[in-house]
Image (cartoon, rainbow, N blue to C red; front, side):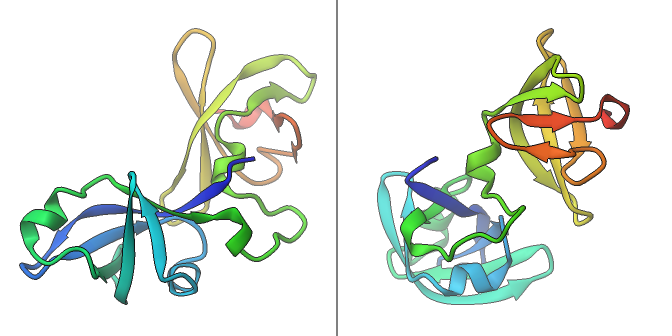
Length: 160
């Protein structure tokens, strides 16, 4: 388990006053609004305002005052301490806990490693790097992923 959990990434600048567009990971605005301070690539950012946007959110941070500064943060991940997050319900996971896990099929045969989790507004998709370097994807829900523990179990019929 990681000590921090990433809640969003800065996707780019919004306007000329230092606002940024955010790509959200997790439960949307509610998960961000519960926090005021974020670890961001070796620095701290203090949230001043947050509003929904068509593909995520727009945020203003106290430390960012112009477009140039905002553009310089593109790709920066916004993380919070794991201890500041509410406990997870059964069957819920933080992306940080899944990325890097080994993947096996329902027979226990090695498939690869989870290298990313994407969401195209239809649910989470696991990106799996196969031993030959190719990439496969599987919906992160049963029956495609029947079990998650120390490894991720996938049904090979669902690999794309």
